[in-house]
Structures are given as C-alpha cells and as structure tokens.
Image (cartoon, rainbow, N blue to C red; front, side):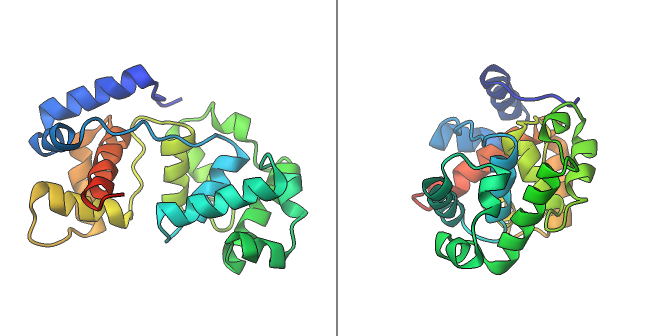
Length: 208
C-alpha cells in the first residue's frame, strides 16, 4: 500500500516541500500551513468526490450537508431510498444522482469493497474505482487524496490547482494540465501535500 498521511507526516511533507520549492515556501510563509483537509473514507467519501465534480467546494459541501440532514449517516441503502425529486432538491444533478446510485448498487452487491481499497496501492485503487461509471481519474484521485490520505496522490485536471500554480509561480498564463502534471513531478512523493498548499493559496487569495 502507498503511504498514507498522518498529521505528523503531513507536517513533515510541508517542511520538506518548503525547503525544495521556494514558491511553495512563500505560500506557507504568507498564509500559514494549509489545513489537513480530509474526507471520511468509504461511501460518504466517494459521494462527496462525485458531488465535487466541476463545481465549487462550497456547492459540493452544501449538497453533502443537505444529504446528511435528509438521511443521517450516508450509506448506500439509504441513498437508494431517495427519488429523483428529492435528490434534485438536495443538489444532485440527474447525472450525479445516477453515478452515486451506481456506486451504491456496486457497494451493496459487493462489487466495490471500500475496506479492500484501503489495502491496495494508489494505482490499484484508481483502476478499481474507475471501473464504476461516473468515476474518472480526477474523482478517483481526489478520493485517494482526501479519503485515503495518500501522500503522493495528485488530481490531474484540477482547474484550481492549475490557476494556483500560475499565481504562485508568477507564470504569464495558466499552464495546461500536462504542464501542471510535469511541474508536480518535482513534488513527489508529497504531491498530495503540495496540492493542499496550492488549494490553500487559491482559496486564501480569494478570501474563502
């Protein structure tokens, strides 16, 4: 299994990246250490990852909170009890409702075992999750990063990270996702820590 972060190793990663990259060091100096953002593993974590697709963090969290208020603990069978009208009021698009229903069904039928995922390496987790309709690379990687707390997970294709890299490194234009991924290679094996530093900068610069 690839390395999972603890609060202690997270701070080790921040310290190491700050010595290796002056731009990340400047972010930490300006805004302080980024929060150790995490999500619950298992079904709730993948629900939040799907809700986060192509929307703001605030929108995804708002829908997640409404879902909790509606059904209590977010488990597969309770989710499947909700009809389209109820899910739409909570904040699920028809597409995202369909995706989460597919995950819920796969969970109930034993096709997707979140406990087993915790024992697999990053690439194995990614491939297993991407077998489910609606879970692409970005969603799988954010689950690895937030729910499984893997130290080197990197959500390729994240627009906020690309924008933050442009700002932090003083680039004339926003780098393409291929260039973003190439830059991130320099932060291995702490890319998940670098991502949190960059998100912290992006949100702080915008007063969020």
